[in-house]
Image (cartoon, rainbow, N blue to C red; front, top):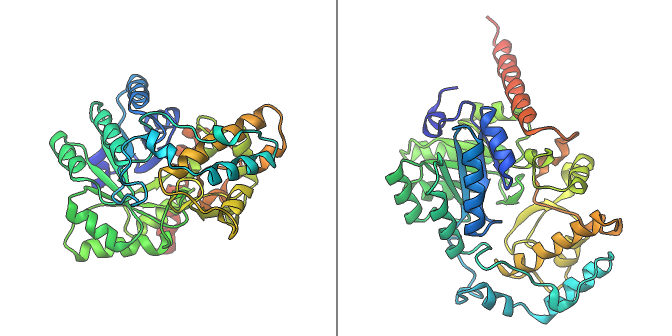
Length: 378
């Protein structure tokens, strides 16, 4: 395939695979797609290790890195300079609520043990900038940012190094702001997507963003994101003006992914209606598989979600404990197993290898395009 996004990134087939797992990134890029490593779960030192491993195993295929440098910081946490200060701001009420909720499912933890963090991990501007500096030390072919306008430092460094900068948007006005800031690729992500997302559906958002950028005089390629699990969907979005697909949830049901066997089993069994857009994992609206965790935190009598990044300092250790409990035989805890996943989970009916997913996308894409051409007749 030869369009602008392929030429910018060096990919053969414009299927972009966002994953927190280096194995998925390598498998997708080597199969002709474009793997993108999500950096937020790593400290800068850990990210350096992950990228060094990718460099050693990807055989020169192109790949990218996704970091989060939030544009807007909640005023309640804006003055904190360290994770130690942030942890100290988490109330006894939130700690006890978490411990009690986990205890109902046989996951025992003392309230004072609820909060866990690593020194430079978490979704904060300073951590995002540190991860960005690490990423630019490697031969990446793309760097992406979400949660607001890509920072000038990222755009300037990308242009200096010849690395395209992508930005995720959930509304056409956001796309126009990103274009004015100087990004090279816009990822139009609909509300169907897993993780942080807006409220507009992919089917509406993609042509809206394409039209808005063209009307604004911007020649910027758009990637479609949100609920895309098949090559036919990818073809449909490209017919609507996108130049490729940015995908995430489909890779969670691969054996290479960071997800647990318990979660992959829940993915196969889940319906598209089994996800929820909730603040109860990161502090910002993010789509994930719905469990009693979300019902409790989002209930009127709950303590209310903490702001980012405090919520993650409570939720991520909790979900690690839940996963460990399941591995150790606690079947009750299985009810709480969750992860970021989009409404496309309803299309997951089996666990497939990452390479197999790329191949299926290719075949489905060709079949869909051929079918459309066939309807035109002679």
